[in-house]
Length: 306
Image (tube, rainbow, N blue to C red; front, side, top):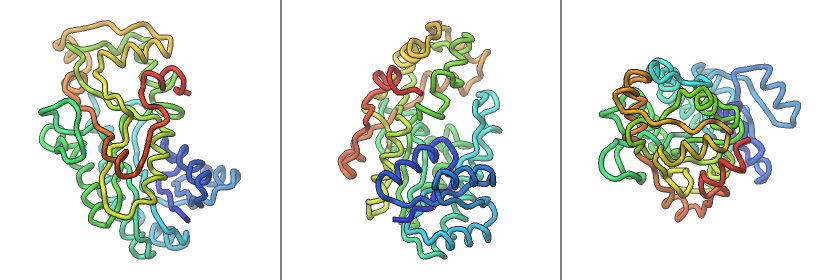
């Protein structure tokens, strides 16, 4: 199957392209960079240069690709996010989720592509009720609108077009911010990442290669659907952060009260550390038969960070 991958040189795209090839598919990689496109071609991957905001060019690119499916991985995030500037630093990705998605769906329809698989995130559930959420639970449009509303917009567009939404958990592994020398490890080594309050915010992780395998599996699914793509062990910050520190050789994080965290990192960071909800992978396991190779971050942090 010929698969057009928009955002092919990002964290997910770089792991998805070889997974598609290994599964017998023919990826066509879209990037904004001529240099990256040339590098992809030199490695044997068909590539095109296009900007998702250029609707006419995107129409041509998807049409020329003769693709049977489209994978939407478009994001525009900095390597390290300053939580005090979170709204500003995520604004560009929010625009891509709204406008880039609309352009990509229009291009796919014009080219006769029937289906799309799109990247979303599993850590924008409304922080109410139980600690672990399924796909029917509401997103945090009321409490975190500048992130959750563009996510909800992307998901509505993709589902209306008959596509599949994959809500990836916190990605770790090669190329992510969770590596031995990534931004989270650097913050721990510089003692800038404490456990705030009870550290009760629940995180759901997924290894980037497991996220890629879930994406390949979703290409075979015929009906519109939304799936959490996470490992088997949602965990509060107080449990996983010391384990990650140990895995990367950083000092164990200290504990600080919530008011100190708010002064140092801002309200949003403290809310995540104390109120974030995790996600269940039961639905994707049941409907797609997907199983993460790294069932828990406990093993993954020790063996598969880099």
